[in-house]
Image (cartoon, rainbow, N blue to C red; front, side, top):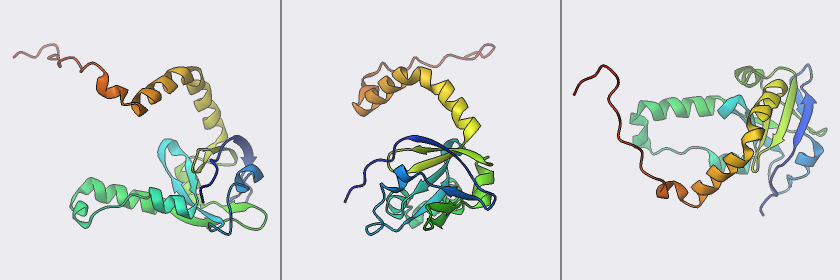
Length: 172
């Protein structure tokens, strides 16, 4: 069964024991009988702490062929991704104990923004989230156009980039 997307923006505080109460509007989207009532906390892009249900975490986790491990970038990414991930359970009050090391890696202290991000939840430092929204919200129309073009294959139709120019002072 498919889960409804996580949506919304909520502001909460992490308590002194590093527990965060997941907003009930987000908790209600998880069917505990079908999915473990827990998350994988992952320090990801933009210094957000992402909370994935176990099902989504398994489906989105990078998988590598054993031959890929000869590539140093693959090994480094795999180490960072899995080292910065941790299984966390939701208690009967809807709280999750967030690992302090992951909070520190994401620059999250006490006041947070909890946002729905389709198939997962993101936890941001509240000030950083508000600054990010203030910066990005005015460009939402342009962003929507670029994303829409990519989804329609519009990038392939774009004009090819101009030929590279030699830097000043270089001679051919």
